[in-house]
Length: 285
Length: 261
Image (spheres, rainbow over the protein chains, first blue to last red):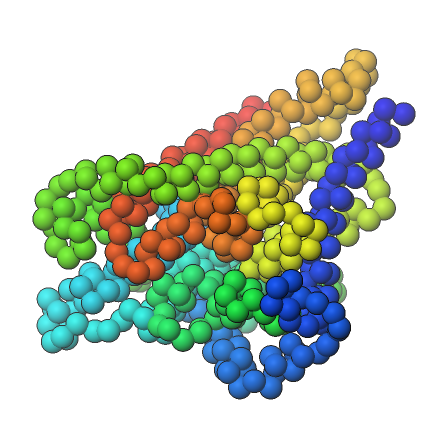
């Protein structure tokens, strides 16, 4: 009897929490994206598709969304190309070395990301370290304008998101059976062939997990674009922030967020599909 | 040749990760206000930071939220993890799926949807809305950490305790909780860090009555360089260093316990 009561209480607590602060808010967000703008009360009836129409027909919004997608894709690509070798080498190190490298990776990760963005800004400024170095080595004659450019935003996003790429990749590559690589080598495969035909297929789950962890959240990091980018709206996050906190157009802001949710859902579904296909292939062989 | 290339690669990545932080710390002690060159050692930015009432208040608020959210998320997460491992019930997989989605969802979506919820049901934006939001985004991490630990330990211990006549409550207090101690501590630390690190959710769900660090720092540095922020950031880096060390010690302790068994 008592067990049953504890059980109900425990399950009720977590279910209630997730329902109230996880599911209901998303449903409310979805609903508000179909309502009309109201200057005083944030949103009001009647239902309308106005926000979505605005989102897709207004060239300004479309441009921000495309730019945001491009920037997020570039960030993901850079994180992957730096994170993959990082995770691969780390997974091949001795246990002690691995621990040191992971701790070194975690320390910045545990520091407030706004503080780190601010730190990046000091490096990229006109009188920042990078310009000083370039001037001192004689590579440039006058300071480069690095800050408040898309490049600066990209560098900042890479800085913040890299661990999110490395950790899932590392978790995957650490488990990779190195004997398979040796077997491929014994069978006469070259390094490139081994990489393409053995290592990449085996680490696909890690690659996808890392890309999902980087790609969608990147588009929300409005403060990086505000601190490092110019006046232009760069990320979907900036658009959402502006609609919710400045322009007070909640339905439009909600509709923009719904786009992000859709993107996330598609990517997660793709991930699930790939995982299922991989396990199916594993069982067949 | 390949070894030195690899070394170069790692050095490059770590330089990229650490040089900005190092410059931040150096400038916190630099007499030159704009950090253009080294003008000598000073502690005056730390004094300026301590004398800035707005900044100090925001720090106090952030720490309060982090401590409360970490404690609540650990407690709820621990109960949920025990529920997940001990009981079989309909919808368990769905619940776990929801938790996973919550963990993977971008902060901005969580932030917006919680804002819509709080305004919709009439919770004023401030301490409570902030606390509830922080507990929500810490929760998946605490459930995962504790579940991992629960799955690792010996189920026979529970059977033994029950055979010896322990009640459900005694079982929890005398057997399960002591075994979970390292996991609870590390999920507390993780939640605390997540809460202090958060910028996006806090920007949306707090009101003018409850200013927190990320918002304060954001508004201060948006217009230019603020040496007080360097000083505060230095303290935050030091804090995260301490937290990483503690959590590593916890991992060591766990490994040791595992080996003894």
